[in-house]
Length: 406
Image (cartoon, rainbow, N blue to C red; front, top):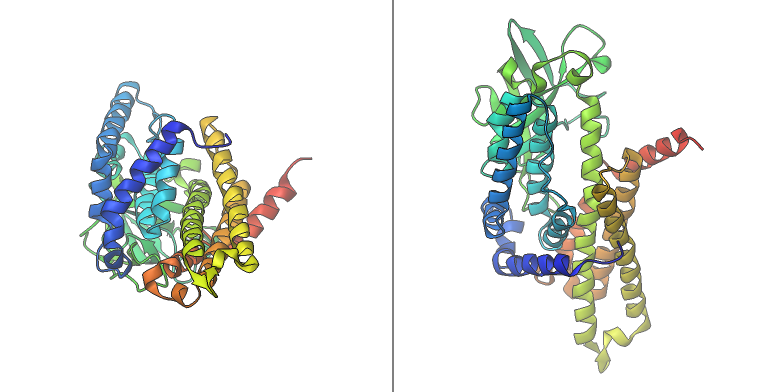
């Protein structure tokens, strides 16, 4: 794949039209945190028929599983990888937070239930999540266990008869303040060494006794995506809330499944970065053509041309990463964790560099919120931390190289 097809470009233009009409006019409300993004996401789903498509997909999937008694496919809508990545990219260039809220709810929360849940659990939670009638959150990060997600995890569950009792705290949880359905990872308190304990996955619902959802944090960027803390105080959980309803064997321990989720998050960063780069590129080219100094457009100055040229190189490189990702997914494959980390590392750094250069190109205007490049710079920086800090990506890339057979 070397370019978008005609159909994909039509999809892109339709999404841009929706963004220009529905999202750009409300950016100040979104980016101040006064307007949660959920109703806008639902409106987008309705406008493009995504909710109906998701409902049909889930209905068919669950019906098939009822008949066969075994796991079916996924929530992917048959070869629509390019459409999804185009939508993600276009939204990211305007409001990265909207994409984060959407991606965590469907890409992580619903997907975790889909891959690990029993038939009854899928029937219970998937329909609302897939159509975005319900908002999902995926809670693994804790105050003392960011990059060391498993080793430093303190949130725990203990057995109490046929139930479990959950205690602990999670932080930096996307959608946490408003989520209806929450995936929570906790260590089983079985008396073994804390770092070696099995990690189990549970599904919680908003309003459960002992569950407290904190207020949204004030952040450097991505204010359109509510992020907060979750507190668990003797939350009683039936076995029906243990994903897979089993502690035994590989299906019980959630560590491998979490690593798979990390890979999905990280490859998605490339599409997010592309959206930010494209928007910076568009704004900067337009500004260079129209801003005049010393009687001529600043685009005539070599230093401005150098900035634009480097932005174009970054755009081409990251776009090619996205094209390669689409081809990999179409072939029924998924990049390895090391490959996903490499994509995340490069694309996030490229987007941040482009966005900071966009601010510099705009000069004093670039420092003003009115011109939007300052928002893009703040959002881009989050990509170097989101889905695992870039320093951790280096470790995963190196491990993948060192373990590879020559």
